[in-house]
Length: 394
Ligand code: GCU
Image (tube, rainbow, N blue to C red; front, side, top):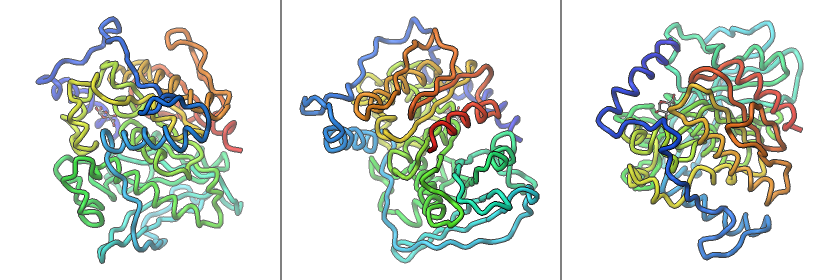
């Protein structure tokens, strides 16, 4: 199933982008970068201290991402309840307990239910650190809960970690025509039609926050040791979620590319126009203004890790995944980690240029690796990332 979807994706990219400018894969054609300075406020004030950052510059940057890129992520609701149901067999019953949890959220007399699947090591009682993966792969036709290549539950459990996942389809369908048919039209209809309104990434991020509401009150979970993981489109989502929700200790975006880790102004691989054309339901409508006009964006993705600092951020790339622009992803974290190092005093300086390092680079609160091969979240990615988790979850 997964292989088919990957093959389809690689076939679809050239076909769908044919009517637009073809993607640039030539480094010598990357324009000179003029990136907004994280350390100068909109009024020209120099930003040196944690207070300058948290009171002045961070809110400015957050508002820009909210209005120009991702759209609002509403935080209000009236009621939330959790119900553990038993619908599927536990594929790991020897080593883990399974909780299938319906999370029902109410607002303005309406309600919506999302489902998380949650495995806890047994027979230990915990409290355990927890990893939440945002899943968007096609639903498994036989109804099974886990594709182990993508979500290595067994290995995580064997390392003493609890792990949960939800599918984006239970929140907002990943489809340009139907994406509102979840929480957007039910719980937040006033967002529809706003140029900075809630779109699919915000909706999926909202669901990750509701999952955290469950994990936070769970007696067997140490929610201070929580890790949010997303691949590709859900890597972009994970970053925006964590910018909105300080409860995640570590945020991992694997191969999140355009609109995630990678600098948009490089216009290498996927561009803003390409992503907005194929996936108009992901970002705020305001993001359309920058189709073919990356130079006029008042921000770039190097400012995103700073919204998560001093909490940990981890990126990874695959060498053949040129569509996601590995160098742009590296620059995103290399430049983005300056908030962690210069404002929060973390040992978080990426010394090497992209071309000269082999990696992985595991620093204090930031990390990166690149592996051989194509676009995918593989066990190799998880294995290297888990080494970072071990060092950064204390
Ligand atoms: C497409 C899209 C990317 C996205 C990817 C994925 O390739 O262009 O932006 O990251 O799908 O989510 O797999």
